[in-house]
Image (tube, rainbow, N blue to C red; front, side, top):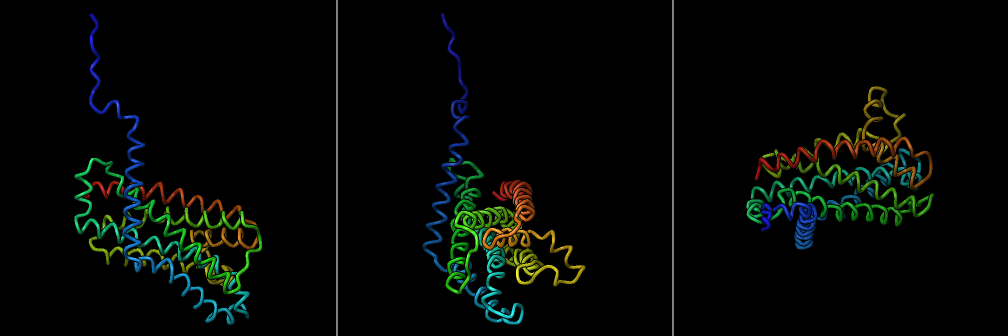
Amino acid sequence: MTTATVVPVGAATASTKPFKTIRHSAALAKRSLIKTLRTPEALLDVTLQPVIFLLLFTYVFGGAIAGSQKIYLQYLLPGILAQTIAMSATAIGVNMNTDISKGVFDRFRSLPIARSAPLVGAVLADFVRYALVAVITLTVGYAMGFRIQTNPLEAGAALLVAVAFALAMSWVSVFIGMVARTPGAVQGIMILVVLPLSFGSNTFVKTNTLPGWMQGFVNVNPITHLAGVSRSLFLGGPVANHMLWTFGWIVGLTAVFMPLALRAYGRKV
């Protein structure tokens, strides 16, 4: 007589759990994209903002800084790409905070999905936003006279690195979205974080033109190195140092703020 082996409920599906989490995250990413398409004003920061920055800084400061708007545009555009793609990460924290305050995540909690799926899905959906800001910045820059001096492969690599950095920054925004009390507070905190990084960098001027006490901060600033990667891959020049710094920041921000965001989210819901 053989004895039947009792398999605990859920054991047979343990190996498929990661795949279910990915599927659930993808479904929620689709939800976020549909929500964005229905409220196109939510894309103003990734469509109009880079255009305004390029036009404003090129034609107002280009002649004074470089003596020529066209020459300055060659230097400015990679920095604007780094700045605007970092600033675009603010929206995800605001949106997450809004969804929690409206009870959307209470409904997610009642569904048979992984608890991390709403957060991961929101970050995946933001990939489209970051790709959009990168493409728009480069397209408008080309219309203004910017020209890539390398090749399409290196230019594509520059855009991919910028998007990867934005995804890492999005976990910072998500964490702040989980701990701040209101959407307005999330936006204010993120602006306080991103603005000093943007202007305390080589986005608009070269590092050696800045005061000595400031150069130390600029040299470790992630925006500085992201802009440096973009300039090297768009225009040519040494890229290894900037690339190592940028990948270090991407890994570091993700390793620190992704677990913090997930923990804060678990406490919220």
